[in-house]
Amino acid sequence: MLQRRNSPNCGPRRGGLTPELIVIHYTAMESAQAALDRLCDPEAEVSAHYLIDGQGVVTQMVEEADRAWHAGAGEWHGLDDINSRSVGIELDNRGTHPFSATQMNALESLLRGIMDRWSIKPVGVIGHSDMAPGRKSDPGPCFDWVRLERQGLAAASQSRQTDMYDEQAYFAAARAAGYSAEVPFETLLATTRLRHAPWRTGPLCAADFSL
Image (cartoon, rainbow, N blue to C red; front, top):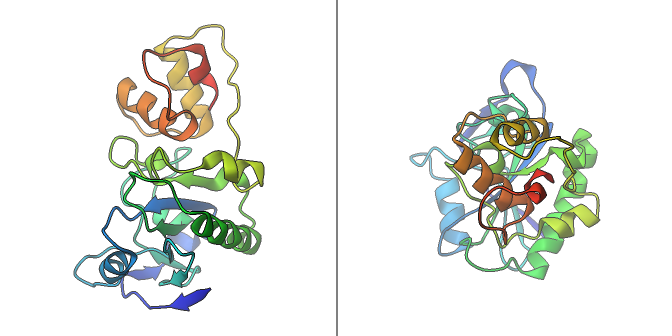
């Protein structure tokens, strides 16, 4: 089910850019209605293209061709102004509980349409935390990335070949995977684990080079 509520918090994409990324967020608010009200409040100066509530209802707030204000500061594969390069999807979730099956079904259907319309590859579907390590943690450890990967809606982890498994090699592997923001080692490790292995703790290990 798709409904519409226009947000004033948007504008034209800069520099003639078109979407090449899809950024997935969680709302971290008490309800979908509260999130929707904030995303459409001109004083909040935030928005997204879509919000999906826990029952799978999709609300579009910004046209895909326009620039929503969802990503903020950050970069991916060395590219900045992610707002001009992406479509933003907010999921009604506080980050502390699983995403419902109906919500995930709606997300998958929405992703297929956006990816088809803008020729976005699975590698272009990322989390907010991926492009803003240390600043953002959504969609969080409860989000089922593997489910998307199995359907070709997100890129699966790849083993990054290296002769060494130290911090310097890890920075190079993470950068090759897209994590180009300059952040401390501990922040980068926590961010990549959040996306690829949220269950893993402890010091850097060879398995962390699969990202």
